[in-house]
Length: 401
Image (cartoon, rainbow, N blue to C red; front, side, top):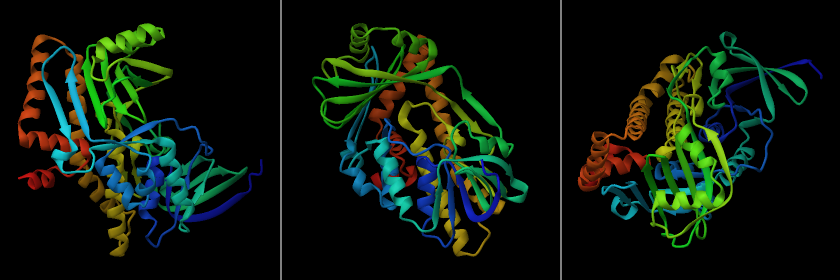
């Protein structure tokens, strides 16, 4: 390996070239600054994820110039049906009632990633180094060392963005810790065929054996996500195809007719964590490096896109006003502005997860009362709808009077 040092400089370095890192670079690309993205993995075409992007995230992608091409193959979710197996209460959301085109859309992860890469490649102010590995960080000197194409490079920066995932190396090198909010949970992903699909309708069903989400895909197919305690997920994993289909049918009910699991399942542990700090002098921690949630209610990536949009606005305003956009007081504006939204999401997820883990009669009755109240009380219904859609709650409630 050639180890000759090469010195370079950039205004902003983003470590992590996934959905969050790439979208942040694009959101900043109109500013008179240079951005360098460092991504450790080589570019591939094997992202098999189906992403549930709420209405707010789709509006954000529209501002980046991505949504028009993505929307042609996106599956709209215009209705959301939430229930608990064996009990009467239901909570239903309808895009028409909320006066939006759709509550959310299901998008192929690879299509979104390809769109982000394409946009980035067309921006003169963005440099993408891939695959490139950060070897060392001297944040006091605002300099990192990386391995790229067999050479060791030293890269000076004004602002460092850690967008390198839940196991963030940059977060660790910055000395920022994490708080674990949940343990011993995992998820299973399946592709399921239904013989009586409901057009543009998604389902969330709470059961003693985990939470089941059914997201509409193309034709008669749905993406099934089962999340819960490891022991509950293990009971699903050991079933053969016939037994699995029978249990799925019994657990989910007859909403979609007969259900058939197709293909192999994808299994992964659920990491639920929160960084103890999200900003330090000259650095921001964002995306899964800052907060990682359970797939219940599909809040993780959607919350991160909201974070990206606000951070880009804060940096843009500082640049326009000729402030040091990497200074701690500027970055603290971002942290302060996002604190309430992030905490409310964290509180909601903790409350929901804890509630679903408790199955005594009092907890069940409480859940049923909450579902009934949210479905019947117009104001509460719109507040929850706005939360799911990533829309500012106060403005949305005012709109509905």
